[in-house]
Length: 242
Ligand SMILES: *Cc1c(COP(=O)(O)O)cnc(C)c1O
Image (tube, rainbow, N blue to C red):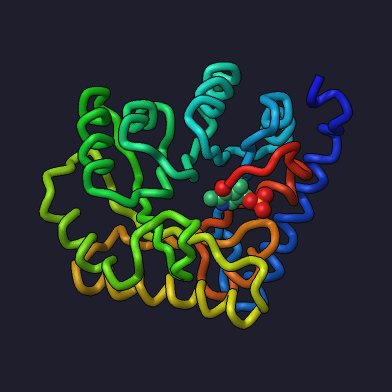
C-alpha cells in the first residue's frame, strides 16, 4: 500500500508550524495574518491524510486533477471543506468543477470561463475565479501572459457569466530562482491585480494566490492572500506532478 508508511500524526504539527511561519511572515510585513488563507495542497496524498488535517482543524484544500479530487471529495463527503482547484484545467473537464469546488485558481481561457459558468448555472452554484498569470513567461507553465491580462479581463467582463465571481490572480513563482527574483515575480502579480481592480472597477478583485512550500514567506511579504502549501504539510509526494 502506497500510504502505509506515511505518518498522519505529523500532519497536525506540520500544519501548526506552517501557520506559525505564515504569522511570522505576515508580522514582518506589517500585515494581519488573518488576511492570509492557507490552502493545504493534498494532491497525490490519500483521503486519510486530508482527514488528519481536518481533524487538526483545517478546512481549505487544493487539488490539481479532477479525477483524483473527485474521488477524495466524494469519499470525505464533508460539506465544511472548501475545495480549491489549482491545476491546469482542460475545457472538457470544466463540468466537474462547479458544485464540487468553491474556487478555481487557474482560469486561462474565455472558453473555459463560459463552460464553467454554464455548468454552475445549471447547478445554481457559484464559483470564485482567479486568473492564472504566467509572470515569468516560462513556456512550461500555463496562464495568460502579463501583457495580455488587461485585455483578458476586459473580455471576461463583457461576457455574460453570472455564476462566476472574478476574485483575483494566481501565479506559480520561480521557486528555484534567487530570493530577489521570486519577490519581483510576486510583486508584479500584486501590481497587476491593483491595475485590474482600478481599471475595471472590480471591488471583489482582491485575491493573490501565490507562494508554495518553498517560497510562501516571500509571497506573503509581497501581499499574498492565499498560499498553496503541499509538501510542508503532507510531506514529499511519491511522484512529481505540476
Ligand atoms: C503542487 C502545487 C502546489 C504545492 O506545492 P508544494 O511545493 O508541495 O507546496 C502549489 N500550487 C500548485 C499550482 C501546485 O500544483
